[in-house]
Every structure is written in structure tokens, then in C-alpha cells.
Image 1 (cartoon, one colour):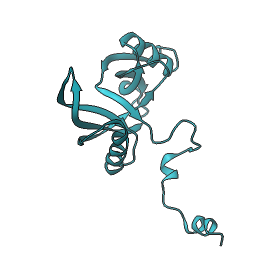
Image 2: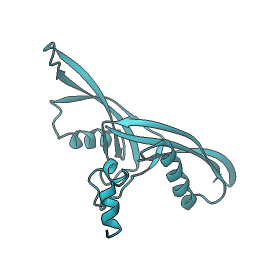
Image 3: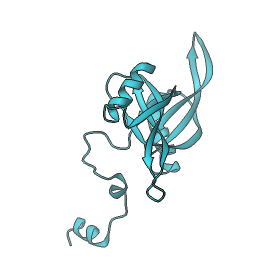
Image 4: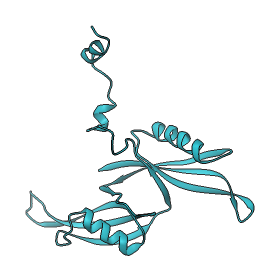
Amino acid sequence: MVTLYECGVRYRKNVDGTEKPVTELYLFDALSYTEAEARAIEEMQTMISGDFQITTIRRTKYAELFQPEGGDRWYKVKASFVMIDEKSGKEKRVSQTVLTLALDLKDAYDKTVEGMGGETDDFEINAINETKILDFFPLFEKNDDVKDRELSRRPATEEELAAAQGK
């Protein structure tokens, strides 16, 4: 499960020659609300000239995040799986939500199926909805050598501090 934060950013935007207040939605990979807000402020300072305000921060959970090349819109895809309950031995449906970057609804469907293994025998897609998310800011870039983001951000142990200080 991937926990992300949707941040609403309100600012004045030039639309058809007049400045109008707009609120845009951005998605941040962060470990807390505070970190999401700090990252939103940092990123928006480079993108927006003038004043802006972080109006909302909402934690979201997605089973997967598919970000293949060639997409410009984010789609929320609800998929359901048939699972066997270990205690009762009965089949039950489990729904999960994934976020997919795609060009349109059909492309979102195709990229989700491809991202989930390419076979629709194991699951079915129940709904696809376009979101208002404009951009996603990952915690680490793809080329960063970080295997576990939680582990990489934990406090250092006394042994690690001593080793870093050359003791």
C-alpha cells in the first residue's frame, strides 16, 4: 500500500487575460502531513510566481501507482480481486484502488492491466475516474539508491553515528 498526500494549492492565475483565483491539486510522496506541506511549499515556490497558499492536505492510500511514459492525466482505477478466505474457505471480493498516469480512459485501462501483470483473469476493473491531480512529486527519484524509504529516514543508531564520526 502506497501512502501519498494530496495537497491543494491556491493562487492567482492568469486565465484569458484576467487573474483568477484557482486551486490546483498535486500529489506528494511524504512520510507525514508536515513533510508533505514542506515539500509542497518548496516545489510550488519554483513553479508559481507570487503568493500561494496550501489549502488542503489529505492522506490517500493506493495499492499501486503506475507511472509509465506517455501520460498526462492521472486516473483512479478501482479493481477487485477474488480471494479465498483462509478461515472459512469461501471466496470473497477485495477491492483496491490504483493510480495510473495515462492519456485517456482506454489508455488508463490498458496501462493498469499491463501494470498488474497483463492478465485480466485474476482481477476485474470496476471503475476508472479521471482525477484533478496535476503532478506527482516522488520522495526519491528513480535513480536514487534507496531500497526502503522508511529505513532510510529512521534515526541513526549510536554505532552508525560513531562510524560516521570516525570513532
